[in-house]
Length: 176
Ligand SMILES: [Cu+2]
Image 1: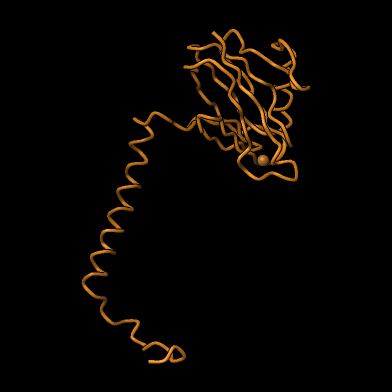
Image 2 (image 1 turned 30 degrees about the horizontal axis):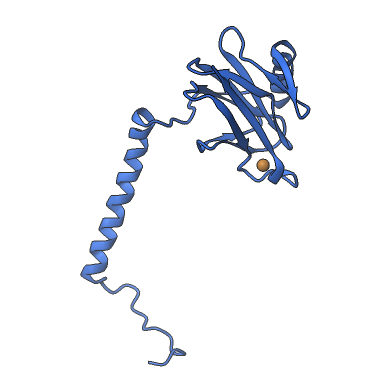
């Protein structure tokens, strides 16, 4: 048969045994991965936040600015550095094209981070740990975090958000 000839029209013909076996294997594998998502949710070492609330971006901005004003301890490259509140809470906002504030956390102390965006969808990727969270305007995610190692961790935006996306970064500092 030449390459220019149409293939035979037998779309409804019975498929071969090998193909049936592979199809069955693929379906079983899909179901297994689907089921394991729930297992990871409860037993995995990395759990994505499942606690979230609706919030107007303007309201989140106001709450974050209030938090920054009260818990600011310094500044780096024009971005305020803050510590968590007495109740172990902190705000982290993404906006085009920076994360604010820089959070200074203590090793071993749990913190509830309220994460949201002032403007567009962003992604929060903590490096080099590769922990990834979606950041959506209109929703606040509660990220429960307990730092286990000291040092400086970079945050990069991994959701394309505009012309400055490639330079969008932030920082988390963990001290003893
Ligand atoms: Cu981005």
